[in-house]
Amino acid sequence: MSEPFSGVAAHSLHTRVAWRRTRRLSVLPPVVWLTAERVTQQALSIALFAVLVPILGPRPYGVFAIVMVFVGFCEIILLDGTVEALVTVDKLDHKHTTACNLASCMLGLVLGLTLFATGPLIAWAMRDDDIRNVIWALAPMPLLSSLSAVPVAVLRRGLKYRQLAVRAISGLAIGGVFGIAFALAGAGVWALVVQVLAQRIAELVIAWIGVPVRFGLAWSAPHFRELRPVALNVFTARMMNLVTGQMPRLVLGYALGATDVGLFALGNRFLEIIIHTTIVPRAAVGRIELRGEAFGSAEFRREFANMARNASILAFPFFLGTTALLPELFHLWLSQDWQAGIVPAQLIVLSGAPMVFFYSFDAALLAGNLSSVFRRASTIQGVTVALTALCAAPFGLTVTCLALAIRPWVLLPIIAVIFHRATGIPYRALLPSVHPLIGAVVMAIVLSIPIAPQTGADGAIALGLEVSAGVLIYFSYLYCFARNELRALLPANVGGVR
Image 1: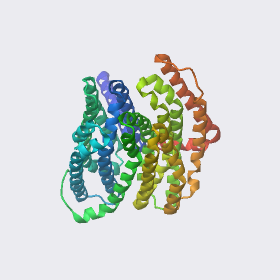
Image 2 (image 1 turned 180 degrees about the vertical axis):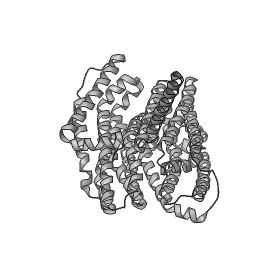
Image 3 (image 1 turned 120 degrees about the vertical axis):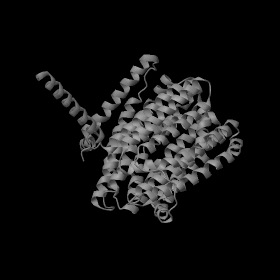
Image 4 (image 1 turned 90 degrees about the vertical axis):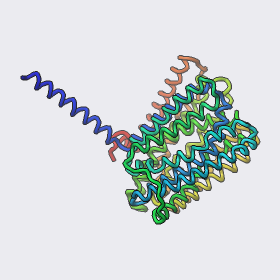
């Protein structure tokens, strides 16, 4: 009798242990899930890039990057504007979602048709017929993005970042399989087209499967009017943000051609990886957490300071360390066709360090329902990027990247003043970010000491040792000079203890 009993007991114990593990997994802090999503997503992107680069070369990436300036414009303003409006509304009901579905789908359809109609004109301006055909193929993208807005907003409102992580990672993996298969078949730029289309379709299906919301298209004027102010402000701000990120590609494509745009896109890819793995998770979750505090209160200011501090501790070493190690990474990883992009990539990555503050400002402004101030700051960003790119592009890729690297540091005090006047948050809330910046600079100086270039396995080992040394230098500095900031980071990002 004892053996069956012990077997049942063992099975019961195993079941309880598995349940506890599952429960612990499900209650991980949202910032952990969002960070895991971003890290995994970027790791997959890097793996795909590593496979596709030797097959495709800079020009296909340049053509695709130019097209995505226009397609991305339509996607981002539709998705982000609708999501932010739905996240901001106090009491979300089914009529909000159906009205948003109808309005965003109609707008997505109009934008898609506009892309299709203007494709030949864009190709003529860029002197490249491939651009026209790629635009025609990607014209459905705005509609696909608009259909994803409601489920993404519902999941974000509920801090369901585990489901969002599954959606993003699965979509990228599915798209990557298609992209690699088409690249190996010799499809050229069409491998990237098929990849992004497959990714968006997979994300759309997975998003709607994961939410307890019925899909519907029904108009409700009162509900739409409730959402419209935030949506319009975010639409405008995202357009300016898109100008910030994409206008240089458009200007360089017109002035220098698709190959230089490919080199610029490579540097920008490193920048996006760092932003989306170190800054965006902290800012996105912080934006939701700040909504739980009274705007202008001491608690709101404290939450903002914590968010900016934690983002800076994570982001600054990545920006500065990557800049220092890029020459070795290029030499080890990429072919000779890409080597001209080393210095431009370094300058592009350096331009990202002030984004720690800009993203923190944006999160606090949106949490405080100051979308009009958010729009104004984004407009300033977009206009200055456009002017910088237009003035510098005739002088070549490196000069353009240098000007774009200087621009955000010059603009930071202006945006900080606008933010302070709108929120009342004192400038000293940013002081805890000073030590992480100094520590990152010290680390980068050490890592920049030139060593003999290595290739193959020896180069990979040497690069790994340098990365380890950089981590040791940076955290040793924090331990010696910023122990309180380091101690405060660990509970917020590892254990979820506040």
